[in-house]
Image (cartoon, rainbow, N blue to C red; front, side):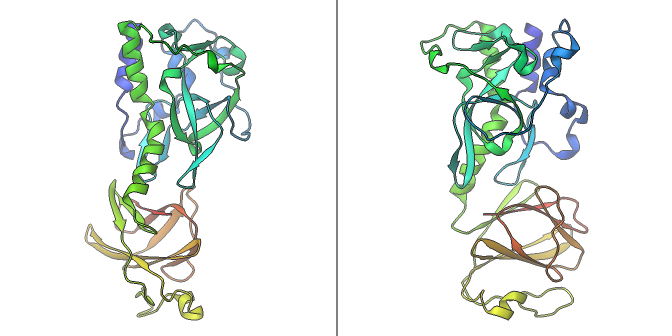
Length: 322
């Protein structure tokens, strides 16, 4: 049992991890592999997690969460283990994002206490597990990656009295709370983003350095685009629809490369234009390449996280439009 505690402690303290340091082998391990490190008596077929198609998210479902995602501030977050969770509420919204409350699931039933619920039905996950009722937390629904099954259980019978824990149980819970921090961080970062930004502000993240771009005075704006000197925003010139609208301007020199980004919001979409001398490309969160409307100008962008790549700069510039 002490070996399990040592392992969980070594996995604690998940933080923002640079891509270059990611252990590809660790990322490929499933939740079931975690149990098999310490318990080799179970047959291999019981360790297989048979995932099903995604249904509508609701209370009582079990999901396998993403181990890696980008938070509201554009930081790359990587957990030490892809957790299984039990959904404890129906979906709600915060800052136009969907979230649920969850209880993490653990295969380490050795640490069960009076306020845990033990599930012995191997048909659900392929192994016995405990529901960590003491570790309830909110997470964004976008972290729910693979639907596993439904659990019909009366959670109202959870022990609410003070629970006496052994030293091993205390250490286990401390490690689990730290290891699941990456899940609730999805909500915490969204709240932080909402607190930091001013209305209609734009967030730009470069190498985990946050820049909240403030709007300039509202007036008819123009930007100098490569090969097209003094060219105004094209559609603005055609229709005059961008007059008296504020723009957001970000200027920076990185590794000797000077560039300027201007962003303008039109109702529910955005226009992004770039002034700099090198090749550029813009991709969305699904790595889809965004086509330029005209040289160095992107039109009709929706809210979300974008990855801006400039030739000569190794790191992506992450732009969150909201």
